[in-house]
Every structure is written in C-alpha cells, then in structure tokens.
Amino acid sequence: MSTVSVDGAYAAGMTATDPASRVDAAPPADPASRVVRKDVARNRALLLAAADEVFTQRGVDATLDDIARHAGVGVATAYRHFENKQALLAAMFEDRLGKILQVMLDADALADPREAFETFVYGIAAMQAHDRGMREVMRTDHGIDRVSAIRDKVQPIAIRIVERARAAGILRPELETNDIPMVLWMTGAISDYAGPVSSDLWRRYLDLMLDGMLAESLPRRTISVPALDQNQLETAMHNWHSHRT
Image (cartoon, rainbow, N blue to C red; front, side, top):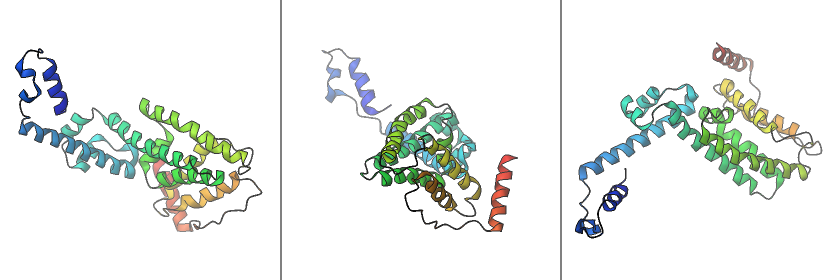
C-alpha cells in the first residue's frame, strides 16, 4: 500500500475537530517501511524482467520457479507477487498485446494503403520472430480475460487496414482479414523450428505469401533470404519432431 493511501485512510478515521486530523500532524513515514516498499517494487520488477526473458526464450512452458531462479529471488518471493504462473502470464501477455496494438495503430495512421498493410503484417511478424512469448500471444489467450479485451480492440484496426488496402486494389479480392492470423501463425512456426538455424527465414516465406496476397497487377517481391540448405532443413525437421514427442 502506498504512503498516500495509508495517510488518507488515517486522516479519514479522525473527526474534523481532532487536532491529529491536520495534515501537518501526520507522523512521518517509517524509514524502515520505505525500504521494505522499495524492496517489494524491486523484486516485482526483477520478476517481470526475468519473465520477459524466459518467456521470450522458452515460451509459456517455463514455470514460476524457473522465473524466480532467473530473477535471482526466492520462490516464496515470486509467489508473494504472483499467486501462480497464470497471473504472471497475464502481465506478460498484456505487455505484448499492447505492443501489437501500437504497431497496428502506427500502420493504420499511414496514408498509403499498401504501406499500411505491409507495415502491419511485417511489424507483427518481426516482433514474434525472436520472441516465443509473443508467438504464444498470437496463438492463444490462455483464458486471460484482459488479454481477450485487448484483442477485441485489435480486430477492428486489422479490418480497417485490410479493407482500405482492398478498396485501393492492393489485395487480391479473395483475401479476408482472418487470413492474416493464419499467415502469422505459419511464420511463427517457421521461427519455432527453423529459427535456430536461420533466424530470418520467416522473412523468405512471408515475402512469398505476401506475393500471394497482393493483387496480380503488382510487381513481385524480391526474395532476399535464401532457402535452407539440406543440413539446415534436417535440423529444422529434427526440431519439429522433438517438439511433437
């Protein structure tokens, strides 16, 4: 509880005629309590930073115990801040969806419909490429209500960007807004399995898929990222099989 809240509650309990109710009569904050509050804030910040790093590398399979160890705090401290991993996931998912929302708002503000569409798709694909936690956000909300609420804000923006591009003749007429999450899931899966051998491989296949989404009258894209060689392909296949077993 903050000092302001404590002082406010103290003052509210006094009568108007009680001299102790004067603001200048309130006792000074206990220095020891200020130290405790700073430690609490510091530990929470450490846990959130550790969770961000662990979820980025390992996704949501990481446990609260794993995150506590990564943060350098005790497991009991972690559970004092977050009752379970779900509570920590909520904080992480909200942060990531907030970043997705900002990318989409920035794209929607662009005047050129094609630039807006490509900034939207590429921006989110780039964010999830190196962040397993972000890829989890793209796939499921894990039953977290606040995450669902942010997603409800995102959908109308996506519809607006796609409809604007379609009206400008940028997109093939068959493309639907709900095709975009499928494309992003596919590029996310490429990062899951092939990312360790080619971190930018997702760009190759997003370029190829974008060519399929854009109107036939538009020039084809330059594919700048090479395909995997045979050894890389076998490593990616091994990663895929390892994940399934």
